[in-house]
Structure formats: structure tokens, C-alpha cells
Length: 205
Image (cartoon, rainbow, N blue to C red):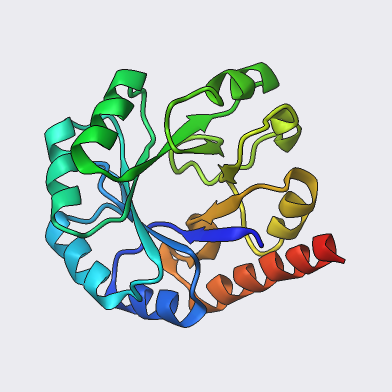
């Protein structure tokens, strides 16, 4: 089964939709200056409202380690996603100081880049077209990857089936693809999940 991450969760209405549709992960954006950014107190409230079986992921972008440690210590997140130019030593320090799994997100331009990035010490890989760009990249560039990875970038209910059949990722990540006018859309969230399960059924068949 392909795992699913709904990213950019900001409101209690979003949390209710997440509980109803039940993806595997819910993402909170802490990177400053982003339209989906929330503060630590809001994240704690959302975490308390979301089913504990759904793992919450904090998304950060080249932020001081102390900020991440503080948010991790609040109990708001179960995993950490790094979307900037953080070094491998930074990743190691984050894992040691928080005890949480780290997802390392990389922007994909070529297949050689993707293979090189796959040697990160992070627990999980994510390949994207850019930090929250909402644009699709050339999935064929991932053909040489042998580690499980999250696929992100421009996914929606209309193309996630194709993505899973072609790329066979460990998990898919979506944010703008489940929104209408900048807000999470429960109908689109449900349609996305249904497309993922249809693809999984095709692969199992």
C-alpha cells in the first residue's frame, strides 16, 4: 500500500477532514513566510485533534536547530521534514537531539542528482520539484533510486494514479493538489485518496 501525506494542515476543519479520510501523515509547515505556515501553539492544538495513529510531520527550511528541537519537544510532531540546504551533520544533530525520524527533501533536476541525494543519512527521502512549488517534475529521473521515497510536486487526484504506477513510491505527498482557492478541500482530499487506492489495487492485481 502506498502511504499518503496530506501537507499544509492549518485549521481544525483541516484536522477533521484528515481524521475522516485518514492519510498516514499530516504535515505542519513551520518554514517562515509561507502561506501555510503555522506557529507551535497551533500545531499542538492540531496534533491533539488529529487521530494519534496519523503521524504528524513538521516541515522546516534552513531553520536554527534550537527551533526544531523546541517544536519537537512540544509533542506537536512525530517526524521532521527538512526542505532546505541543511548539511548531513545538521541532519545527524537533529536526529540525536530530538529522537525523531527525519525526512530529507530534495529538488530533482536530473537522474544523477536524484541518485546522489539518495545517499543521505536521513531516515526517509523525498523528491520534489521545489519547496512547495506545486509543480510536477520528470518522474523518469527517479528510475535509479533503490531506497523507498516520498514523491511530491504537482500531485493531485488526476495524476497520482499515473505517478504510483510509473514511479512506485513508498509514499505520496500532496498540498496544493487538495486545495481550492488556497484552502483544503475535503472532496479533493477524498478523491486523491481514492485514486491512490485504485492504483494500489492495480499493482496488487
